[in-house]
Image (cartoon, rainbow, N blue to C red; front, side, top):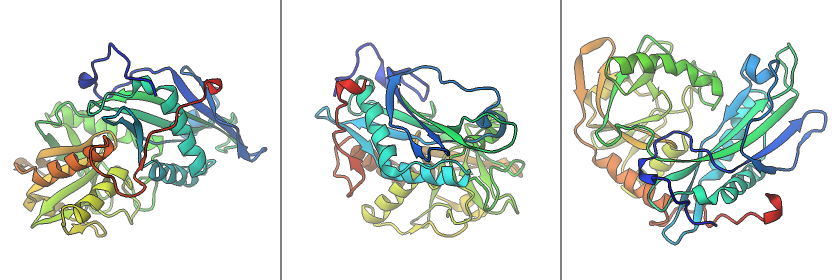
Length: 352
């Protein structure tokens, strides 16, 4: 593995793209019935015709994976098996060619090794990996026969610039993010544009993000624009359940549930619907996700009660969980079994 490249201000990186050297690609055709061998190629444009099913009908799914540099300089990949399983789940739900876990993880390792000089120093960020799958066949009917897989990388820092001071979040009833048994639980690319207008309008009012409720009654809380919700109430940690297939089965979410139960000894309520009113008596609120890790929510404002701002000065549980998780990711704390691929193997020169 190469040492970090000079000239990048790692601590000032936000969640924006810094172009790296290489990407990994593969193609799938239903006529052949298998994925082509992974190819490591120079980062650059990919060919997409105007008639592609991805552009016309939204056949596109993606993932977000992170690699970290340890204090000894080695690079480790965080829970890629869960990303692989979710990537496959997303593809199957969208009627696209699924990729097996082994090939997915191999692609992650290859793109890390090819871009290892862009993995930030220990504790100064992560190399964010973006696996992308889209239908590349061209025909007017909404059918899929050919698929392109690409994974590229970018060093990143904090998603929210206001993460340290805490977020002001608006709970909306005007807009919905997903419907029961729809596609809100998978990482379909089309899920994300639907949250952009509500978030833009909220930012114009001085908020940082939007929290969504269920589409039937606006009674149950679900998730934010691109992150899961947690809150502490009466000594218990709560997070909305995923059984109704309306929210993402977050990998950071699953990791925090494990750490809260097994390291903090907390009771975690994660398998039942949670009402909006429960947030009004919460002691602490935070969001989680691969990009943001954990972001403290300092206040919630409910759209139907805009004159009242509910404030959450406590951040004790969220802070402890964030420190534990980041220490695991950076190799400073022993990880639970199978959470890390430690010391990602170097890429043979001939593959480049």
